[in-house]
Image 1 (cartoon, helix red, strand yellow):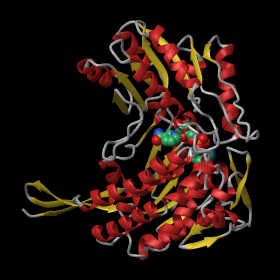
Image 2 (cartoon, rainbow, N blue to C red):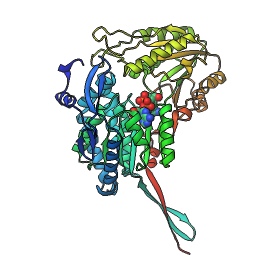
Image 3 (cartoon, rainbow, N blue to C red):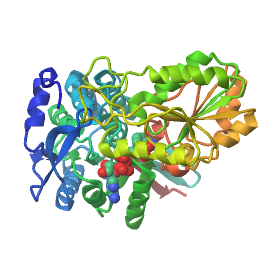
Image 4 (tube, rainbow, N blue to C red):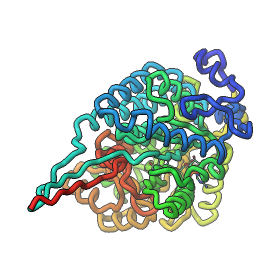
Amino acid sequence: MSKQKDLHPAVKEFMSQSPVKMYIGGQWLGSADKSTFQTLDPGGGSPLATVAQGKTDDIDKAVAAARDAFRTSGWASMPVNDRAVLLHRLADLVDKHCDELAQLESLDVGKPLACAKTIDIPNVAQTLRWYADFAVHTRLREPIPVSGHEARQVRFPYGVAALVLPWNFPMLLVGWNLSPALAAGNTAVIKPAEDTPLSTLYFCKLVQEAGIPAGVVNVVPGYGETAGKALSEHPRINRMGFTGSPEVGRLIASACGKNLVPVKLELGGKGAAVVFDDVDVDNVAQQLVAAVSFNTGQVCCTATRWMLHEKIWDKFVPAAKEKMQAIRIGHGFASDTEMGPAVSEKQQQRILGYLEKGQAQGADAILPGGKAEVKEYPQGFYVKPTLLTGDPDNICCEEEIFGPVAYLIKFKDEDEVVELVNRSNYGLANSVWTDDLERANRVAEAMVAGNSWINAHNVFPHGVPYAGVNLSGFGGGVLGPDTYFDYLRPQSIVRPTA
Ligand code: NAD
């Protein structure tokens, strides 16, 4: 790992534990069978830390701790405003320890440190506060007017929420998934991705310091096939929130189906950006280049299919190519880095594999991608940004690559482009770019997905639900008011009066 001298002393100390322990029932524990795994710095390809590897026994312990805390810690029955005070305290601690969390996030994922510091970590605090405040201002007891009866509906937390999360925004997604579950009074067991467990474990120190009762938040790092599987199949969980690939989403949904546990799936995407001929070409090209290279393209909703009106094609393509070529690729800790490495060698190979397959199927490379070399870090998992074009049924236009790769398609009119957008099996997020707001709104509504953005891409204001359809998931999404209600079970109470 690089730049040891730049590390916050608390980060150094945290990573030097051997192993970094899991957090269960308010205690820091090694795994039951003492096994460990290593997490790598994708920028340098070298080991970062040794981490306790949770398996079935550890998941059992964590679910039992979460269940106990739900029943006995007072968390579930606490007045909502008291719980909100603790969540605000936690949010303040996230802000206070932003530097440490951002360093861990940058090192583990490979993302630019500035990005972790200004986007990922502050977002966690914002989400905690948003749900804490929403909970305080939401009535959980509603009278129901029915003749001959006195009736009301009351909402209670479910119990243990199991959260299985991916590696692209480890901490930010803890915020999106944990905050509504906790604000509603549930307890949680989190299984972070094996590539990026560090920030989530460090966050538990803050959970402890905030005074959140032991067992309310539990984190078991480990592999998907062992720890993730054990958690999703556990008969004592009451809710499941999964963010990840459709392939694993199916496994999680069937495990939850067997136990009749309600499940939320936030899955992949193949976002389109539809650009009409009345835009400022240079500006839109810049914004789409920024979108597809953000987090090295490892963003579920990013703009990967660029649909360009035929009248702007000749101007847009060279502008985009020039901007893609100018992106500075480097280690997340280098201050001038705009795009870090892929998260792992596996992910780097996945991206390169798609480029090969796409070109074998006839895609033309406007800007050929491939492995990128970063002089100081020859072992890092870097890739170059790529622009492809060709038939819309090319594998690179249909499947989620999860890298800085855009597939460009020319269109003539609105009907044609809406049809092209809606060919996808995914349905997470698309954008439309035009000065004609009437057309923008029409196209935004015609594109079948959970999210349509107008003259922007990758926009996530708190309070606006973020969800997907088809291969992109189901179950209500995250970030909206409904997400809070998803973590509450409704109970009707009725007394005949006539
Ligand atoms: P993944 O599906 O491989 O893994 C996600 C999580 O599931 C990890 O914690 C992993 O350990 C666990 N897992 C793996 N196999 C498992 C199994 N058999 N049983 C239980 N758990 C298992 O996804 P990934 O590679 O970590 O993340 C990339 C995917 O996540 C992309 O498809 C991306 O689009 C999607 N994603 C979606 C959103 C969203 O909000 N819709 C956000 C971020 C990422």
